[in-house]
Image 1 (cartoon, rainbow, N blue to C red):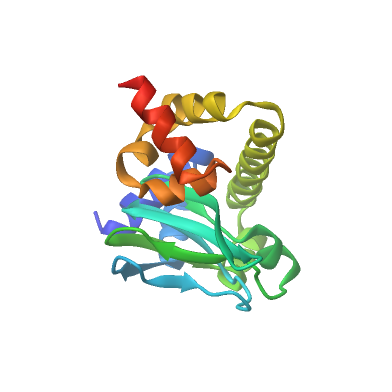
Image 2 (cartoon, rainbow, N blue to C red):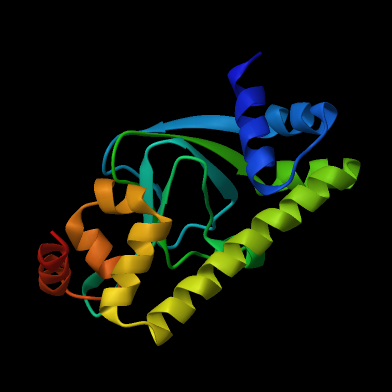
Length: 192
C-alpha cells in the first residue's frame, strides 16, 4: 500500500475510523512535508490553511508576548497540529509552528478537506472529531494551567505525554507548563 494510505489510516484510526473508501479519499488529499530541526511551517501572520498530522518528529506551536517566546502546544507522532483560530476564521495566525527535531508531517489543505467533506459524510465526521479533539485538548491545558500547581502540571505531563518530557528542550517544556526553567529544573531534581 502506498504511504499516504497508511498515514490516512493512522489518522482516521486515532480520531474517527473510516471505511477503506473514505481512507483512500482522505489519502488522496494528504501531502507530505519534511522539516529540518528548527524549520518553521507556520509563521506569525500566515493564514493557517492546513491541518498537520505528525508522522515522525516533534513540533511546537508558540507565540511572542512582551518579548518572550511562549510555547502553546507540543505534538509528536500520531497527533495533529493546527492553528485553530486562524484555520477556522481564515485570519492571520498569531501562532508559529516549528519542528523541534527532524520531522515528517502530512498536510491537508482546507479547500481540499471541504471539498471531500461535501462528498463524504464519514469524512465530515472525522473532520469534526479532529476539531473536537483540538478544542478539548486546549481546554484541558487551560484548566490544568489555571487549577493545578506547578508540581502537578509537571506530573500530569509526565503521566500523559512522557514523549514530550524525554524529547523537548527543557526551556520549551518550562514555557509550556508556564514556569521558569529554574523551577522545572528543581522539580526534576527532586524526582530523581
